[in-house]
Each structure stands twice: as C-alpha cells, then as structure tokens.
Image (cartoon, rainbow, N blue to C red; front, top):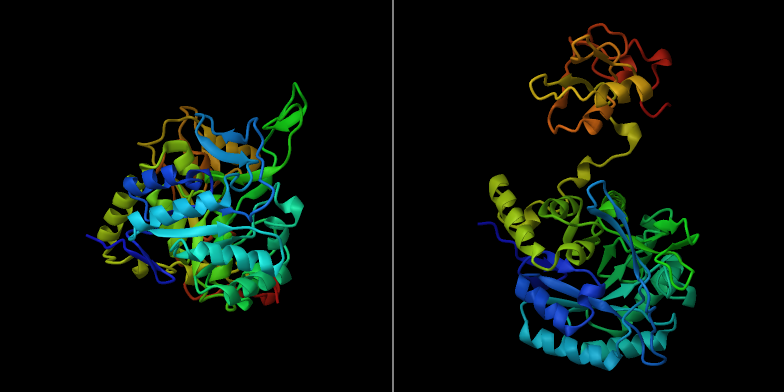
Length: 436
C-alpha cells in the first residue's frame, strides 16, 4: 500500500491530514480524540499573551450558507482566539505531545506587534515540546481591530518584521498563516520568505457577512440585535484557496517555499488537489465541525487507494505535479477545439441544457418535437455551461475536434496545416494570443 507518511519541514506525521487552528483544537480533550481517530497532526488553537483574558460572545458564534439539500457549503464564525488561560493550554500541549510523540503538534500564536511579547510566548511554547509554531496573520475579525491577525497579514512589511523576530528567537520551525483578504497573495508570501519563514499556510478565513435577518434587519449570527463581519470557511472557499496556493507555488520568488494547504478540504480528493498544486500537507476545520473527527478514516483510505491506482508510493510523488500546468490566460492554446456531445441514453430530457444555452449562451442546443436535445456544432463554442447545469453526471461531455474536423468559428473544417493561431485565417492581423 501507498505510504502516507508526511515529512513537512522535518516534522513527521503518519499522514498529511492535520487539523487547522480552530475550535476543534482548542483543548486537550478534543486533540486526544482527534489523534485516536487517526489525524496526523494538529495546529493548536491560537494562543495569546498573558494578560487581560480574551472574552468571546455568549450568543451565536456561527452563521451558515447551505445548498439546496441543506448541505453546509460555508461557515461564518465570529469566535476569537482561545479564551482559556495560556498556562493551561501550555500544560495540555505538553501532556498530549508526550503521549503522542509520532503526531505533529504545531502551536498557533497571536500577540501584539512588538518583539518582546513574541519572544516571551515563543520561549513558553518551546517548553512544551511542540514541533513548531504557526503565526496567525489571518483572523479577519475581533483581533484584527486590535492590530493583530489580519491587520498584520495585510501589510507585507509587518509580516516580514514579525517573522524575522520569531526566527531570531526560536529554533522551532515557523509557519506563517496568510490572509486571503488581500489583492495579491504573492506579496505576503514573499514577505514571509524574506523574514525567514520555513513555510506558509493558507488560506485563513475570508471576511464576510453570510446572511441578514430580514425581520430584525441585522447580520447573522446576531448578538442582542447587532451583528458583525466574521471569517468565512468551508467547501465554498476551496476554489479561492486553490488559486492562492497555485499563485505562490508558481511564483519564481516563492516556488520552493513549503505550503500547508487550508480551505474547504472535505474529502481525500480535495486534499490531493491541494497537494498537486504544491502543498506538502493539508489542514482541515469545517469538515470535522460538520461531520466529526472520524472523517479522517475516509480521507486516509481514499488517498491511499488513489495513490495505489496511480502507482504513487509516497505523497511526495505527486506534490506539485499540477503546478506546471497552471498558466496565464494568454498562454492558453486557442487552437484547442472541443464540442459538446449529449449521450441520448443518459439524457432524462429535463431541458436544462437547452434553457441555459438558448437564453444565456450561444443557442447551440436544439430541441426536437419529441423533446430530444442535440448540439449544433456550428454554433457551439465549447463554453461548458451545458455540462455544468446538466443534473446527470457524464450525460454531456466535451469532445476534442482535431485539425481536419469542424472549426468552431466558421463551421468549416480546420486545415491541418494551421498549426497555430497566428497563422489561422480567422485571426485578422495575425495577432498572437497575447494580443501583441
């Protein structure tokens, strides 16, 4: 069987599935249950400095976005970092690490943007035997208003400065957790690297208001008639996370920077996609808050079976394999042509493809009197909308049209000698894909 052992920054764990810093990793009881279920590691919920206690709201902390079947698609939370005493957390981390030496324990940290508080808390964490620290530069709510979390993560200069402080004051590996609430994710990643970060993790939660109660006219979750922005996570954020991971992985400045992937990981396939885009491991939160710790069993068995089928013996075999295939739009092959094909045996004649294409796309699907749907090749531009709206998986597919077959622009055959778009007769002015 495939070996799922993970070696991230020299931190070994039996598999690449870690729990992200969040409510599931807030205390010893939870973490022990997670390890017994099979999780390879955890990032302990964010610790703050000794001092005035963190006080969380006592009303609802979470809001949600659901699919049509009430499947949880996104979760909004307004919970702060741990509200448990620092010393209590440190004692619990020490005990758990002693009892589970083969599991990874990373400690998430957030203190004011001054060197001494970082120096103090790093020294305290080192005594626990933890494997590393994660600098929380991502939380968008509550702590950001106090000059921490996302307030730091949005300023590359601050990221570099604090990361350097930490690297100078600890021998533990330092992971920098990045906020997605920024225009260009490459800039904070580059700043973390300049500061000496051993790795980055992303994405943290997205600034959000998920719903508004139209009776009380307040955002949800509502606390005594008022609401606030929170952090959005769950399956809905996965596409955003994948893109940001890919941007860092294919950026020449950060191409060799290890990445821990976070954002909507729910299944083994989600994890494999993150890893194919350059992540050495993945962190999970919303999925375990929805289904419980034992979902890791399916993740382990699913990833192992897929690796066996593909002939991968180690997780390192496929990490980053998809990165070379991520490119900018102008480098896409404009001579690659496909057409939609409808499997009549699988079609349930619902008409969704026809309605979508006729009303909003290219009028490339026709309906016969006996309600049979077929594709008009001369009108089809291969937009894939019909595939996406069809309720029957595999009923509509895209078939590649090779040179010598039908051309999507003229309805005529594509001459085999036209090897590139520059020479194509339908390219007035012989402009290349970039428009130059």
